[in-house]
Image (cartoon, rainbow, N blue to C red; front, top):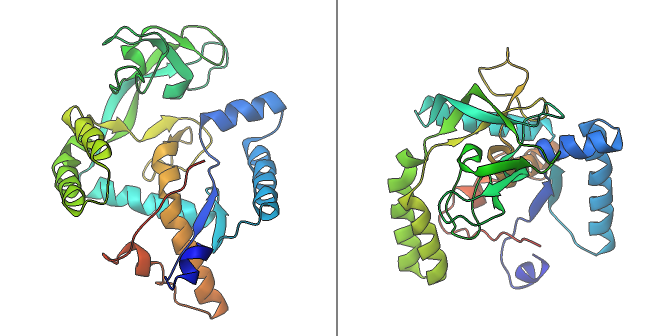
Length: 269
């Protein structure tokens, strides 16, 4: 971001710690602390490391903030109220030793399509097909090493097939612009060929409450609906802080998120 600013660009650099999901519960249980205590400790460690490395952000935040919860719930309501969230009954994997819900990647077995070993409950890396945990042959919990138990429960599903046409049109535009590599375009379009509704809620006590299900405290939004919204919620938090200290407007985040000329870059490491 410093280099881009030196070249004369307006830059907004935000990030934060992703603090929800079953893996946090599993790790906290092993350490004998609460999920919040574990998240607090790891956030301090990560922030100190970033400072010591000389990295700087306009805002480095967390997914356990009230701001993030509000933004995520508002987006969920928007999807639900516009008909893109479907309530369906689905089998959920439970670890028989801990009694906790198992995230898809904590279940492994044999792929029912290509028969490769080590396929996860969400995808087979060998053939690239999306899977559900109950699809696996001889599934095993990575937490206890025991076969998971499946129970029927209600969840919200994001209607990805209902969005597939718009996604394909968007990918066609990206392909025409030449901004993505051809293999990335081909991979993304291949995913649309077999896209299915995906569960956006989980049976878990740690995470963002599901709007409308306040009477179900063990139903929370799936961490991969919550976490990826963090870039947007961090931008909104950055703008709200600027408005509070008189250096900007609470709508400044829109200069990047609603501006068709703005470019987004995501760093993974």
